[in-house]
Image 1 (cartoon, rainbow, N blue to C red):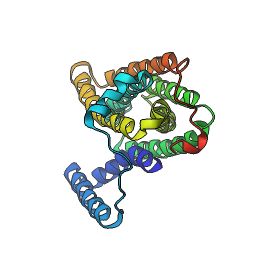
Image 2: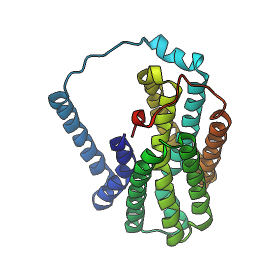
Image 3: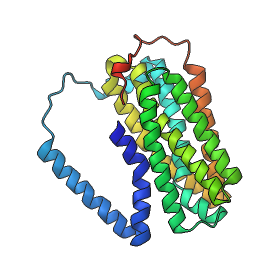
Image 4: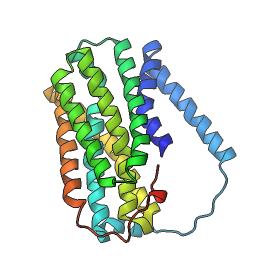
Length: 259
């Protein structure tokens, strides 16, 4: 999970660095080449591991119908991912428009965001074992606060740095927590539940960027910050409203948390 989280928060800053020194086509070309290398490495190095059981497509999509807690978690993930990526996709034009930020500053602050995300991920690996709901809630409160700080003080470089540091830390914590929420909601069918989580997550990355683009086109670049804040708040309220009083098939001990 650390690899996924680090890649999520560091990938865009690295792409920004490369794009600043070349162009976006070169950046896409390099990423395509790396993908080919990963494909070859997987084929050559990853051993074949037989499946312990099989789950039909009907069973996978029937899980959230039968499992109300998993259904609630998936909605929480949808709101969080839509809000985060709807806003984060447009950080660069937002800073250019509101703070007249240079390319060098934007690259630097995105790298700081990536470092913060990595730190938040590892910290959440410890705190989630003590309070999963608390870790997720604190992370979302931090994300919401970061968006509001960026809107209030992002017209200056110091304010933008503070907001992006808090945003990175919070995203790293929420990113790890949402996986463990899926595990807690469906411990006996985690692989199938996680496939739904991954599908919802990746779909909402694309939809978040799409909706954010529509907001930018019609309401201006500052509107995506409010878009992200509203959805982060919705995710938080939904999680707090469904996170207590529901029984799972058993407590999730710290040694099975995904970290």
